Length: 340
Image (cartoon, rainbow, N blue to C red; front, side, top):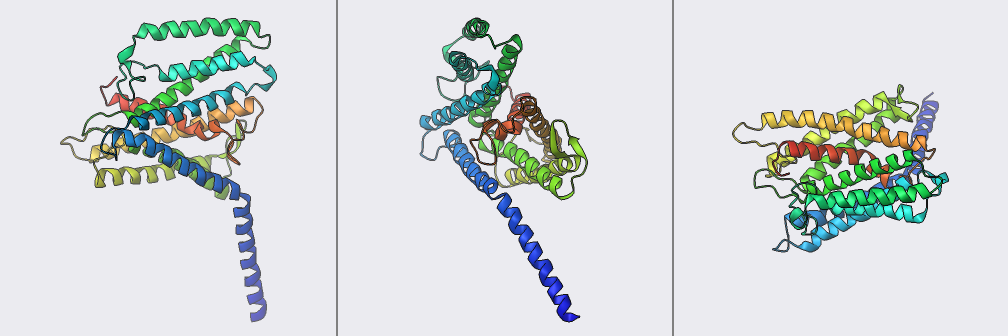
């Protein structure tokens, strides 16, 4: 009996090891790509952070220009993925280039009283009417070319413009949150982006783990069949815990405050309450962004926006949740800052 029991236990152990081996083998490429992406994001954040907290003794302009050029290239890739969603349309190349050019110019054109970043990016050199002229000029040229493209319909015009505006706002939000220098009390910069990344990543990881382990009830089967209510709730819970830990570390060990909640003489308790509310709202926005982009892919019959990242899809597949969270974080920052 003892021999049989030992043999049975050994077989169970071998089965567990085999299952774990299959699990890691199944997600090996996904894990490797995730590690590479985390390293790339770390370098990207370092480049932007150097501008506000120079390690070279001065404020290096190469840092902010490099950061913005990288964001511009990412925006180009995102716009290209949006344009190519409708493969059957076969839009003229000149129309695609015009859409991308429009996005680049709007990204570098200031909105309001933007004074952060390089001289080419702030409002000191132009007036608002310049933006309006460029906007109406693009609309006129865009409609002319679209009219000549037989497969381009009015709905396509609205679709493209809405997504150009959304993506430009997302990258403008990132530029603002990273490059804005407010004052010695209310700071933004890399802690803010790190805080937002923690919310998005912990939501994704928590939702994935919760869905795999005990997910049963489908969240939105017609949009994303693999997402479950159990996974969504787990994602929000994990995001709440990890994000608040991040906030506590920043507030207790340094002068950094990821969002500009002014502490003053009221103490940190109200600040933590505000963060709990904001993290919960941003977690919901993160998951809604994921569902929105999933609906977009399903509507156009594609699995991923592209295959740039093995087992991770394209740029928009990685920025689906973060884009909405960045815009929301930007709005929250504006509510507590009188800078624009």
